[in-house]
Image 1 (tube, one colour):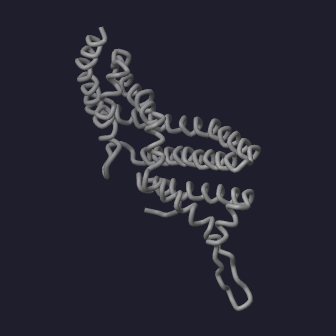
Image 2: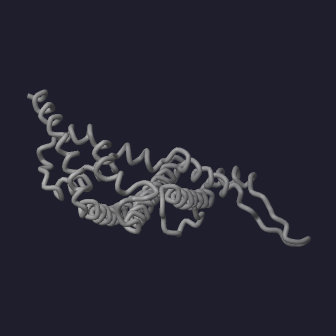
Image 3: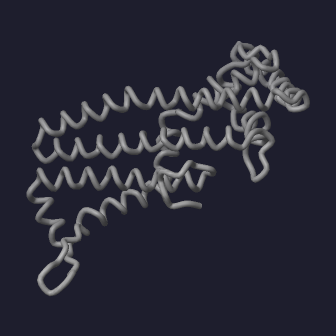
Length: 247
């Protein structure tokens, strides 16, 4: 596994590595911005800064007061999977699975997707994804083109980088506001949301494109297509039961 965050992502661990480095970099930039604007914070963190002696007359300032907190933020994002928690809170993966992947799988197998209630799909989402999608794209020996899977992972990694970077700078804007620097805080908040509003949907569209390509690869094999069709067919009794309870 490469530690280079620009190396194309090939698995989930390398995705986490990329997110860690870019979240740490965003946190470092945010801390430097705060230190340049908030004197009390700079004074506090300066006590942690160190110097590296080059020779008898020269020394290099090492901004430990900025680097250490930034790495802690990155480490927290890695340990607690902040992007995953945000995805759960906002329903990002849930909606993507239902609206993109499962819908495409149903359409590709001539299954009437609209016959299933939202409640039924949500209840059986994990099982459907496992049986209809993940078993073909996960593992050491995926059943479809590995390059397609890696490109999808790579694109999702940039999406999560964007999510966590947005969180870092939104939090920074709140710190500005809390410290009485309303103008700086609101400017950063607005700029961050503007970039997120423009950038994240564009990246999601690319994720959607790769997901649909994977679905086509899965359904290209008749045996796999039949397995997908059977997985949806097993939901029909559950759907009928849901409708009866609603009535």
